[in-house]
Image (cartoon, rainbow, N blue to C red; front, top):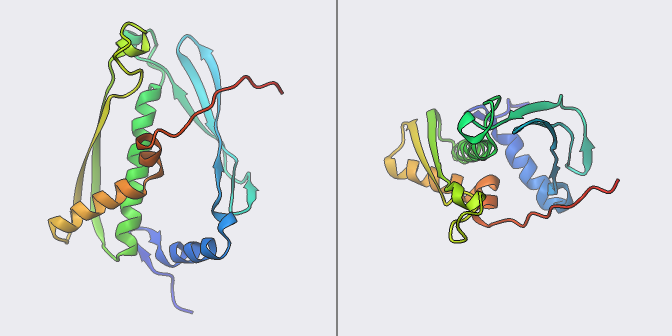
Length: 186
């Protein structure tokens, strides 16, 4: 039996096997990720992720991962964790990077190093209802990648474009995915 093909730490054989499995049984591609959140004090909250639904079944095999969130003192917090809009940038950074690595791997492009920088602009007048003309969330997010690989610059640019195209977090932000918020009556 031939060894599995690994590129940039990605099992390319398994990647294509998953694609074929999802083509054969599209319902296996439906995933549901979950998080819980508890208010601690002031602007400090604690979010937890653990179980999820995927590949046609519940998955409770992961250890819970806990994320502390707070605001900096200038926004009435005690800086006990990243603030929620910073976590959004963290989620975007991880997702774009994974998408870029996956796209490079399936194209058999060995990467030496990938770094990225994220900047998001928020005008707090929207959040504080001081101006109806100012949106509540980010008004713009900029992403800058540095890629070290023995490939032409145009191929690096293509990897960045593909990462943006196939990142679920980037798509969620860009497409303004509906969010419904309700009281939990259970």
